[in-house]
Amino acid sequence: MSEDQQPEMPEMGDVTDDDKLWALLSLALPIVAVVALLMEDKKNRPFIKHAAVQSLVVAVAAGVISTVLGLIPIVNCIAFLGALGVWVYMIYLGFQAYGGAWVEIPWVTDFAKGQGWL
Image 1 (cartoon, rainbow, N blue to C red):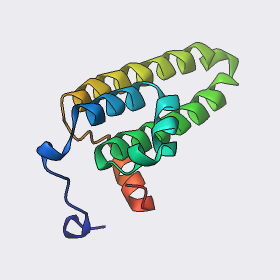
Image 2 (cartoon, rainbow, N blue to C red):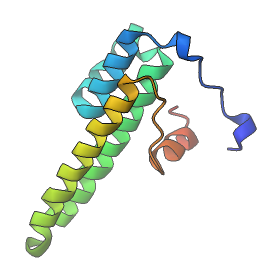
Image 3 (spheres, one colour):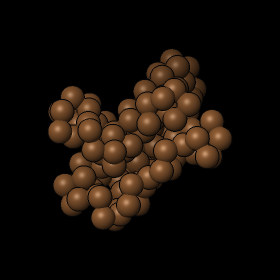
């Protein structure tokens, strides 16, 4: 999808403090992202949906990779540290979203947009 076909991000004034809090929690805790996408009033907020969908994509990818690597005894510890690193990175991104930034995660954002989820 080319840049001119992508929808414009809403103005900063359209993002409420509630949106920022839900984005932070969604990025830090994927279960909150599930809850946000199930709540009718939250899933219709573009800022919350943007963060929640990316959080779920990262959580599924990290879970699959961690499980596969965890089956190999030698790299089991590395898989755990990798999953921990992803979680710390997601918390960092959550705080950026809490500051009002539209978080773009390399590869994940493009994948989610390509699937039509964002």
